Length: 175
Ligand code: SF4
Image 1 (tube, rainbow, N blue to C red):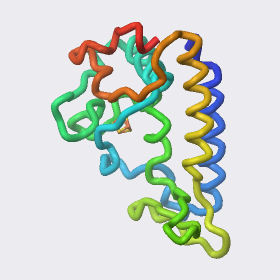
Image 2 (spheres, rainbow, N blue to C red; image 1 turned 60 degrees about the horizontal axis):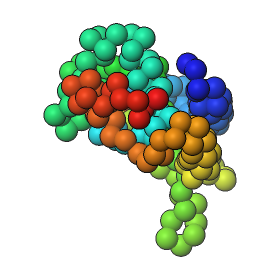
Image 3 (cartoon, protein in one colour; image 1 turned 90 degrees about the vertical axis):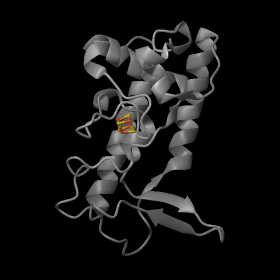
């Protein structure tokens, strides 16, 4: 994928971190989302660099096979069988779904959210999880660089607007 080297390195590093978190927190049966579960697949927005990755993937697969349901309350790329049509190119947020996520509560203490269906083992000591702020900051910076090189707005894009039927998929603004 030309122009996506840093994004691919980013996703590779995310994968390594999620594997580490899984090793530290997962019970034996909790690898991956449960088949057919799409609880997290609501409509989302993505950064242009992520949109470019989705469009590049969909073009290589043939948009006809990607399909989509832009008028659904669920994500436009979720099939009726609850399968992600762009799984290999799914955005950062989708890759983190279901994993333990660390965030600061109103009292400035760390809290952890995790998918109840996946059986992550509760923390015994220091909470283990993905700090979304840290990874979002890195994604933000590489998206800024990606967009600056192309002279495009770095603002977020609705994922469903990438569908050909929503006419933005082939737009040069995604490239
Ligand atoms: S892109 Fe795929 S994983 Fe992400 S919300 Fe849509 S269907 Fe779910």
